[in-house]
Image (cartoon, rainbow, N blue to C red; front, side):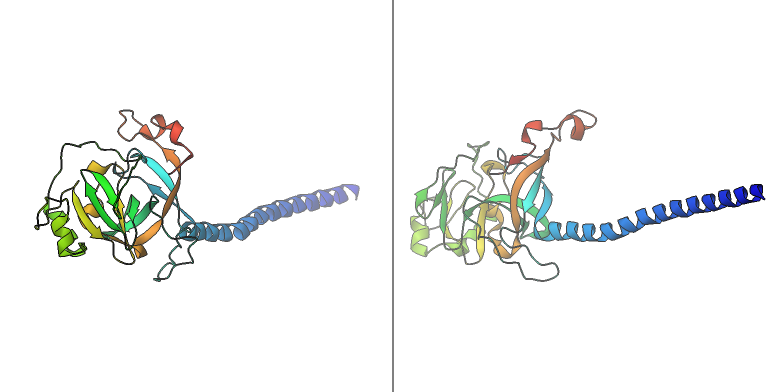
Length: 258
């Protein structure tokens, strides 16, 4: 009788143990099921309306930003766009001259560009010998670099500017060629006036930047945000086998973008 009772007790303990283990297992799955969907929604909400990662694809912003820099972009500052609509959230402030902008390239909105804002709506801009002139004042831009100062190409891409000259008289008296025939070049152009709801942007690496000089103004509706900090950076042309590990630029990690 006692042996039978012990066997029954052992069987009950074994069954209870299995039930407890199953409960613990299902409890773990239940916790994940409760936590994961809100976490995913929070991630996509932050990515859509607050912060997004961005990689620097070219050297047009050197020395400020380098090829191989990975940025966190502040999207809420200028008002993030609501997906699948043409509406934006309220902006904290409007873009200011000197801000670095991430925007969709007007010629191909599927591509993102990063440049510095140099002209807002209503500004009159010109360039003389590679120096930028805004509203009649020559600017001292400490962040600008010139890698090919002796080369000043004059190409057909600059001719779009003719539609934004202040007047025929202004164009005739402009520094560009000192001639009624407007012949803009990379380092000598203008004056031109920025139209409403548009922005004029330039790369800090002025001699190697595909920017507003070539393809025109940026509609403010194409703004994505402004870079906040460099969260990762490596030298992409490193000869090492794994440059993203061995070529890390440790001094740039966490650097604020200005």
